[in-house]
Image 1: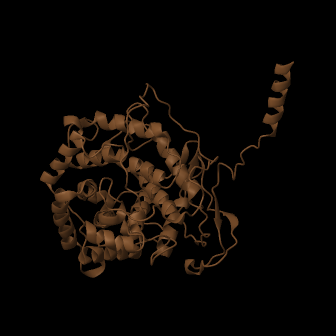
Image 2: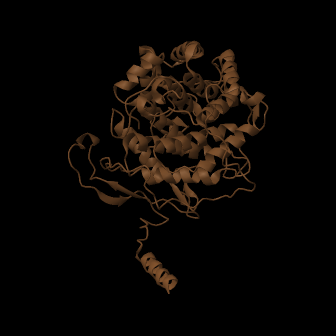
Image 3: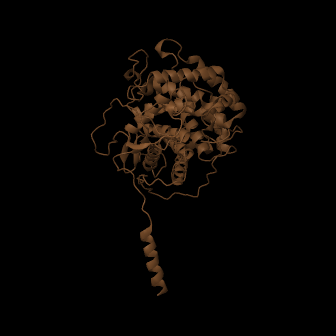
Length: 461
């Protein structure tokens, strides 16, 4: 009788539990916006009404067509607890085909936050880290060039002739993913502390973020922002997560979480990496962007499953050589660029500064020095050396900084931009890609706080 009584009591209580409320349907994203207004007028109390972002096509819909978008104002910041469950998360996709050691040690390094970008911290960290007035002016010139080459619909295109440039600048790219181009341009602005709520580029950043939302394809695995390549997915995820982390704008949260969910589902569950398409055996370059997307999601307080990060370690081990001091593309045949990517990934997945492989790898990068032909390698290696600090960083920084300042275009419509003709990615990414990568390399002093260094800033994003 006691068992029967308690059983019926539990059943009754179970019927009283509230069900999670699902907002929207699989074919739409919900956001909250104010009446159209300048962001400068966001002072005081505001009332936000829910409206829909531009309809996001579901799987099987007709191809998306670019169109001029009128961008509404974005509601005031409403912070949400980082641990609050988001019931709109997509179901995960691919399943592992063999066991994973989930207890693998990952002593994550402390640091790497976005707090160095805000206010006076940017100038202070630039000075401390080795930046100069000339390097900061080069960053601003690069941002102004990017601003001038934004398309009418808020996007950036690797073929910059599709903006108002109309052939005034040489070296357009051929890569078709507008989400990748838009995201890498946005990352340049966000890296300098500018957001859609603060700074002189608010309108450009707002329109760029809105464009990413308009291109989001909702699937059962999360929010697809690839436009044909996982490079686009990773870059878009980083941009959305950083914008959300820096502003707390809850209109961005479901889109950023959905982008993370898609990355999680697209991981190769046997090898642990990512490549051009979901589930493909990974390569180091695509994996690097996806991992940075996941780490940006963690910084923003979004849901990032721990097993996904552990699986990245498996991939890195499969392409490493000499105890993890060098890395290959899809095997252990080392390259300079993939070694830089692998070492940065190891830093973000928990290797401490006293790890022998990391120590030897940093010496390799230092001995190779900055490249005049490979901005991709320079971008990653600069981050590794900056996190490492000390004499090796100081020597690297002096060469890298002064080289980039010296080769920035200074005349005609190209003024403020970069192009590296011998870079392997330059033909596809063009002047947009080269400029964004150079700007982010010069922002290294404050873009992410050092993982191992003693520099710190009050508060974190």
